Image (tube, rainbow, N blue to C red; front, side, top):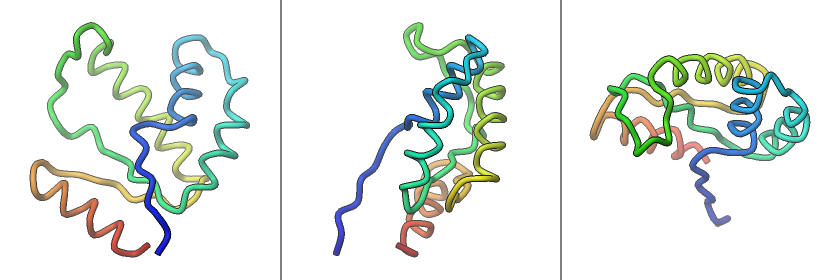
Length: 101
């Protein structure tokens, strides 16, 4: 069996934040290529309440805007599964998606 690598965020997410904040799409081509090498991406829906993260997050508006950019990318790249819900339901959704690997 091959090892599984979990990434919390990816080059694609960094590129999309760069696009959102700086209108700089220069990272997108390389990020798309890197994302295309993943067998599966779990797209976490922003359906949980937003919570501040010690000044590292800009608020629910930014979360929604970047998630919209991510959804647009999801439609053109690789195998993506939406993860929704909370607690055990959210975890089970992720486990079900990974069981296909």
